[in-house]
Image (cartoon, rainbow, N blue to C red):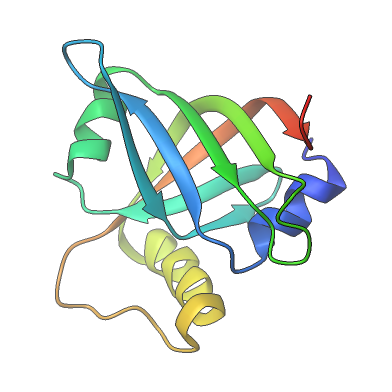
Length: 127
C-alpha cells in the first residue's frame, strides 16, 4: 500500500530519478516522468532503452523525488518492477502521465511501454 505522502508526491509533477543496475554492477540513474496505478508506481520508457534492459535483467529499482510543495522533504521508494504493460493498457497510463506533465497525450512516434513498480520500502523526509 502506498503511503499517502508518497502517492501525492508521485501523482504530482516533480520529476523522479530512477536508479537501476548496469550489467557490470554500476549504478545507472535517469530523470523521468512518473505516476501511480493502484498501489503501484508507474513510468514509461522505450522497450529497448538502457533502463528497460537493466530492469529486465534485474528488476530492482530506487526512485527519488523532491515534491514541488516541499522539496526539502524528499520521497524515496525502493522496489521491483513486477510487470510490463504495452499496447492500449500502456498508452492509457502513458497519456495520463503525459497529461499531468505537458497537458497533452504522449506523441505516438516511438514505441513505449510502462514499467509497474511494487514498492517494498517507502521513506518520506530525511531518515
